[in-house]
Amino acid sequence: MLWVKENEPNVFGKTKKFLQIGSYVTYKLTGEYVNDYSVAARTMLFDIRKLEWSEDMAGILDMPLSTQPTIRRSSEIVGTMTDDAAELTGLTPDTKVVAGGGDTECSGLSSGLTSEGQALVSIGTSVMILVANKRPPFLSDKKSRQLSGTGMFSSCHVVDGIWLLEAGSMAGARLAWFKKEFGHLEDQAAGSLGISAYDLLSTEAKRSTPGSSSPVFVVAHDAIFNLTLEHKRADVIRSILEGVAFEAQQILEAAENSGTPVRNIIMVGGGSKSDAWRQIFADVTNRPVRSPDQAETAALGAGILAGLGAGVYESISKVPRASAHSENIPDPSTNEIYKALYRKFKTFYELSQPQQTT
Picture (spheres, rainbow, N blue to C red):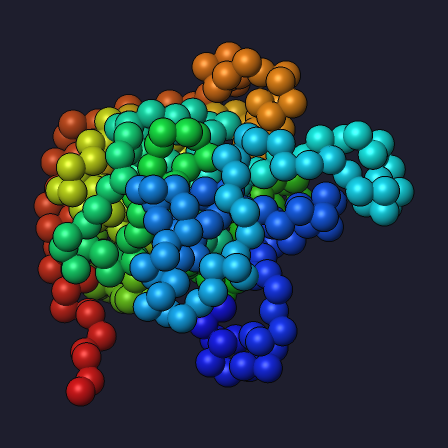
């Protein structure tokens, strides 16, 4: 919004509403301009304590609040289908539409991230980490706020009365990079075996045993430390998986230092299919890691919100939960090894920080 204001003032002057992707779809379906709390919070123009657009931020940025959509709860019905939308989609005009929410927040809802003390780790090409809190979390430490790719920020959940401490990065893309550049054999074998090449990489990572001489991958700065001629291919693959877990541990530590406890981890996304990666997360963080047996958790969460809005479910507590899931319990001896490696990781993280220019 600021970029348009500063670089295309003519467009800005003609703009009636600024909409995110989901709110634009809602507009096309219903003709209503609506955002939910979780998406509105991402604009940085939303007061997550008062749950309304911020007059203070609007004044500082000279951003008219008239350009912002109406705020509704995630499970609130915002309208019904327009005739044009009904004809285009094949749905009836009386079909109800709810506000919905952000994709990772919807994943959190369907996966059970509904109370304080829980964390969600979503691993795909990008990695998102959410820590639930019953009050708006605040990080006073500037260094903690700058952790990970996006930095850490506070936002709203699609679950009423729950706020989130969030951080995101492209950490998962590092494994995709390795597969593309060095995983040709896995790609060929996966095709003939009818499985994923990532499954084969995960299996190879299990052949590596963590120890004091293990390579340490600082994901945020794309640097591998402690790599020697003694290390094998499996050690490098494992260091990538461990590097993502170390980055997550940094974020969980910052959350706990801010007063947000973390009891357990829910892991979703493509990375959650890897038993090796789930166990590494459990051993690095010293917390149990649970992964629901559900591929499309974001779509399921959106469906739950629709069900709540339409009255199919009386409340979130009445929503059926998937009983099947994988659970990985931390191994105390491996956790001790990872504590030492994590200390090295933090040192290497500081050493590889880009130098600030003046």
